[in-house]
Image (cartoon, rainbow, N blue to C red; front, side):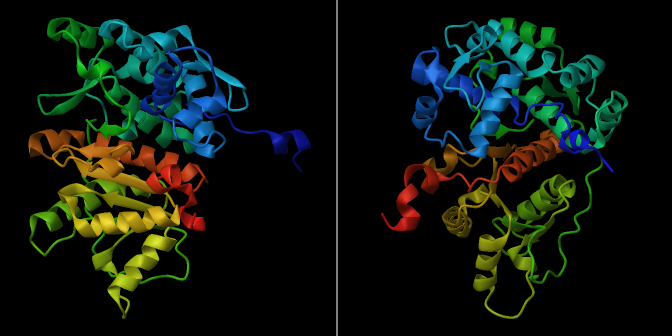
Length: 382
């Protein structure tokens, strides 16, 4: 029988609970609302239109602290920027100095991320399975492999370290990026906004979709992710788009979570399809919404999901400008402009989607959306 001490022992998470660009939003908020100075935690989150004591906010503070952006825990009275955090978030800092500070915080400070970078920099980035094998050999527990690799990929992408060269995604050196910054002036590294993620890694073979199967509503939806997407008519561009995203991106991203994906056209139970769709929207523990093509049905169903305050992950094509009401919420954007740029980036997109799923599902807070933030009295009729 395990001792009390053994039962109380918790495994240490080897990486922060959020991606670097997400954690950076806290530092940017301190710059915006407190002029970079020490600020009361409750006041800061009130200005951010977020609940200070929600699980998501606690993870944000913890992640920002672990990256070295801020000082203070989710129990602290005040939060403040570290010197490196101030450099990484200040608009007065030169783009190159800001990049160096962000690189140090996002990659060098974490042992696992630093080892991945040092081992693979300057080369084609291997598939996720190779990256996971490498950090497994470095002592990372199996349960954390996916999260470590996905967070590393997202962080590297945010810093501009991933670039498609000769049809393959490559992990650039810090010096390479700095040289490009000098040649081009100020790169977009300094201007990226954390709200929208535009994915840019090498790929395993694209898995064949197992999605087009008969699906019946089960008594339990504990393992269900409902996919809100523009479906369109058979052979339409919308249907081909939806099938591609579902089979090559969303389903692979869901595999590690043991969830099955259901799309409206797969529901075969007798009865009103609209009733069954609403049942999935209301009951499924996770909804992934593809906002591409600005399909009105998609936005109607997204609004219903907002009303039940449950987790949502948003996707969209880069070509589609997001409406104002949902633009402020994190969206994984997929560049479908050319097959020659899409295919090398498929695994990066999968990693970004999986990372968003993890952060969303690990928080047991009610889903954060425009209603919960700007009109919390909606449910009480106030």
